Image (tube, helix red, strand yellow):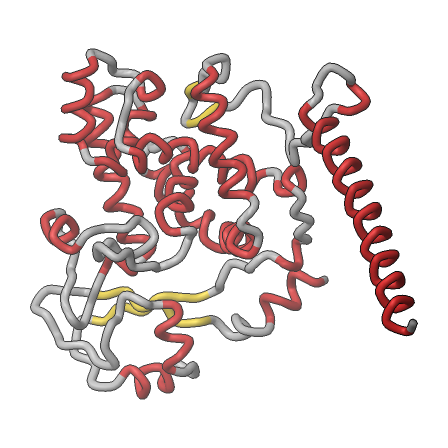
Length: 319
């Protein structure tokens, strides 16, 4: 008797569970079919874009042909991938406040479009990074290429880490490329892909417009990535970033001293100027050793932090 009642109870539980499962499946299919059904506006799934693509975008004085679907989608891709890396994007915005004034000045002195400062964001995110291939610094310069252009690169000094020297290197490259192409967009593309690669594709495709050329993926994305950073840095709130002035990295105040003799200890050198080795190397990352060997007829400009560089800068911003 007990076994019979137990069996009835089990059967009742199984029946109830089956009914629940059948109802759930039916509702699930109905929900799924409503997602697929685009005939009824009430049942259509709507994807809200996190930002609005500008109607007109200019890079280095040239309008991006946003009427072309591939141009528009390429820019949108870079805005999505660049803006929504969050922590990395925030760091780029914060660093831009510190380093762009340095880059802008050198670009202006060389008659290079101001927008080229965003190429450095695309290259290195405004940091002295080193790529897996060995490209180094803000402008990602290869060792052999840097040496060919007269940069000092050895185990004691590596000017690729010097923002002023490396930006001048980039400007020299840009000017030579502009003499060749007469077009700033192709100049920028050639910095990423190399002139020979650009020339080869121009010859193959019989096109000399960056936006009409099929290029290697990295170069094809390069201009759009730079433009994306321009839009993000100049208007971060449009992409959901609310970063106050006090949160931006301040420009660093320093003065320069000329050094034309050997330095046996940069720790002692720093102490002589009332600072420390850490801050000295922060301002002069191109000094790769704690000492410097004298070179004939060579003068180095070494940055020394001004009083209050560490604390005064921040308090100045907050006043």
